[in-house]
Length: 223
Image: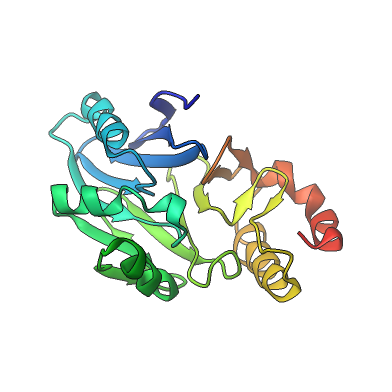
């Protein structure tokens, strides 16, 4: 059974909420700035009514009216974009995804990506930023979105590129695995400290510190 809307983190400047949707336990995340009301929804995975409830659940998180600013997508796989078209048409807000996945999203659900993201791009919203980390391998354009909390640990929304216990699925392709593993190590583990929180595309979260001791094991097994 999918979990109800959950307030994961009530931070100094933003809240982070999560809803689990679909039989695949896809996570959709909502970041809301407490003062400005600016919001980013990460992965409109499925079940538009549930995502509307997620948005509604954050009304009390801000001292002003919430304003959805962006529908951000971590990667092009079908289970992460099933509600994207409905929400994009309903809200009229911009969409964003990795450059190399934009065509795949358009072909599958008929949504043109307004903002194509490459490694290091930064989205500026009213009161907070999200930076894009390109993690090649699960899909060509997979993006992790990073919120650097000025008052506490960093938060990484990793899509299907990093989970508790390993990197994302690369279909046992050695080249794809090497690409994803190398990017995850170089662009996440070598950049952010152990207290960094990881919010994956399915299931429960973790920290870089909890996973770091197992990197050599992941590399050796090849998945």
